Image (cartoon, rainbow, N blue to C red; front, side, top):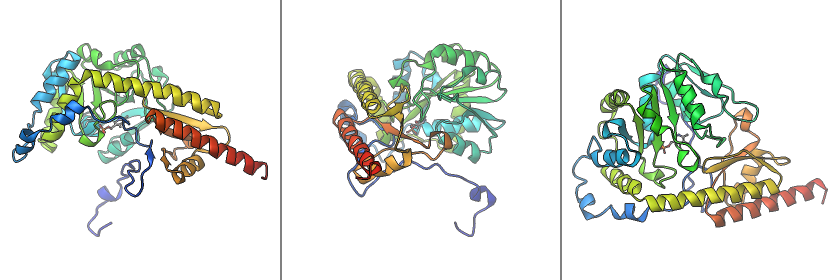
Length: 359
Ligand SMILES: *Cc1c(COP(=O)(O)O)cnc(C)c1O
């Protein structure tokens, strides 16, 4: 800390991202990236002409990408705002709508606490049920902004679209933000509801299902009035928020429906393979609708397993939060990565059992 900080900076608790190791080649299953490459037609968009235009600013309206997203979901371009990753979309939405209070589950995406604290938004954590599901009735008539990741971060558990709609209906005078970072891997999508409900903000990203985490592209879909609020904040903070390379990549990625469908299908198949393998090894696996699973072993605690996997070249994520500290979160890799993980965990368990027998 420098000698120039004020209480404002001293009090900040920044987000702790998952490790992005540069030192050694790990099987990387810790930050919910897509194991499959970015769409080849998206990569092909980065042609000479795109590169030759880098002396010009990017389009502050992201017109081409905005139109492609609007066409994909059957909404108007005025219902779409493109952002620098969905973290930026969340920041704009928290700044706009959470100053007088925000509520979300006690186990969810850690960035919500960070951004709420940065902007001084009073936070209410609502406990998940014992089985880690969201009790949707706990979110009725809150009189403050409701934020829900669906499927939920860390647990992977999904709330049905009708439950989401009930939450929106029972909060007509405050905003409901649905963070759909993992929705493409699940069974429901709230974007269609933005036509009916003027209090709904749906936040989406290209980072997970579109294999573009490094490009940093997210977007909001909401009623026209909400989008104009958020645009005002965006243009006050970072008018050229999305660079031209990332906008070109994302525009093509959302048009490449075949590749998208195929890679999402592979991730879902991997989820079945991994869940089954873990259960056979004595894990409890929460029912995931996302591209990761949260799993707890009946003998080896989460932190020990995380460390033992890391020394064996596999990175998973462990969280210190009390309710999930005995779990590890494992991002779905390719089929061969999943098989390798299962093999290594089986070896670790055998080792442990032998130790316990005094061998
Ligand atoms: C990964 C993630 C994000 C952030 O995504 P970016 O678009 O890469 O900023 C937002 N919300 C949740 C729940 C996530 O898991």
